[in-house]
Amino acid sequence: MGNNSSSSSSSNTMSNSSQAHIEAQVSSYLENAKQEFDGKYAQPAKQTAKLDEFNLQRTVGTGSFGRVMIVQHSNQTLALKIMEKQTIVKLKQVEHTLSEKRILQAIKFPFLVNLIYSFKDNSHLYLALEFASGGEMFTHLRTVGKYPEDQTRFYAAQVALAFEYLHYL
Image 1 (cartoon, rainbow, N blue to C red):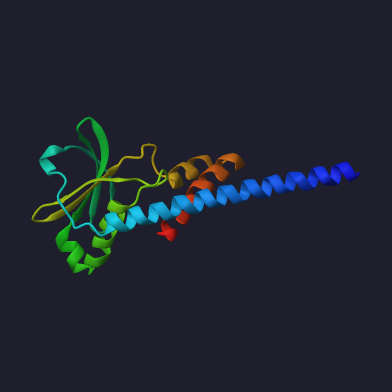
Image 2: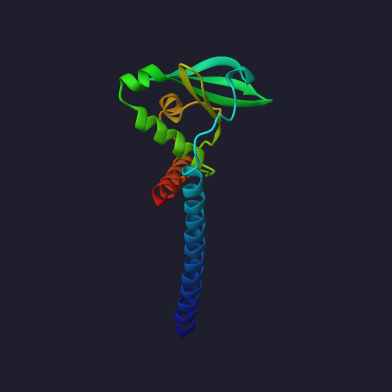
């Protein structure tokens, strides 16, 4: 019985040590991510593309300010968010929209889509984002009824990690 107790105790010590090491790595990662975010967030807006560089394919969503289209640019499939300036001003969403763009230009995390290009013309603002194929999770959930427990855990972990990243910033 004494051997089991000391084995268990040393096992707990190893796991506590491993836990502390993992927590230190996560803290270091988040601190580096925050510094990178702060630097990119402070950068002034700049045009990184033009509309005529994109091959517009189809609309995949619509919203209050405009629509999202699937586009091709340099052999890359992207989601192009096209927002009407006039509507943004009318709905008093200028600050919100600028904040969205600045946050998107500054984040970099595996479970969040990245902003690839941003630009504007006289009537629209454009955000070209990585295209995440496969559709919306809610649509899939409606189709299947419920996800298996292991798949649910996987998606929940991704969402939790993305929130942890964003809230740390």
